[in-house]
Length: 398
Image (cartoon, rainbow, N blue to C red):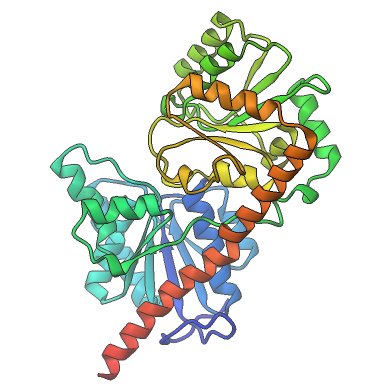
């Protein structure tokens, strides 16, 4: 890995070595983490130096394999004195490594990064991965660090509207850059029949039975209960529904879901699996993928991944999902929290004729590849870095 002097721009073909430091709480699986790693690899591929600081996690291995340096800092902490200590560490890194831009992807590390950038005069970028809740003046102030960037990236137009309506920001400094999908992984022809069969056996799915898949953390606002009510209304025992997602310690909610499934007569229909290491195969195994969140989503990664696999998707018409699905063409939007409209959409999806399903798959894949390509996301992010580096060069030459 090379470290070089600060330069004025990043060219997608030939870079002369700017240093980009991204900060986030940890590198466990998630949308913010995936975007961080993808951008770090793109910066390194383009000839720059990518640094990532976090408290660590499984995805650090991806950085190591790509020879991207990871710096371990306790950036998940929200304690004020620890945030200031992290700010001092980040400022030292900025000076020692000649960092040109610091890019924060979460609020706690963003405060440390903001203070470090203020002290060192380094351009500061933030990415809003969600519309953060504002429950008090203190919470508004805490969230506001994400609106203090020299550039602010919103992962959807829904998030952009949240930013400009809740904070006094210059709209011209906000860039909408949707999350990107890895089409080397999420593509129907990249999944072998053997992988699908293995997963089907693990889930004990009978041959030829329609499968409804809902990938989401086991938390109430993700809408698993809404789906159970819809399945009861559907009244079919010749189907299977798999809820895939970690309970993250919410064992009481999982037990509530299991009891409710039995009470509704769905004990043999519904299966819960907290871990799935092969989501492309899971999508291929499904006949329809459901997103039933009752709170607005900042993006809705499952919706895009499922369409990339050619699967019809049912999603709540709330927040960014309404941007990421074409109603009636690649899937259906339903009223959030409404089992009746979800039941209707499920019936539509399960009754698709083979030619209708194939045409919907083609439209879904084309839509996602046009709007949610990973390379588009990384290039657009590098364009943001370009803007800031060019601005700084212009100021220095004035």
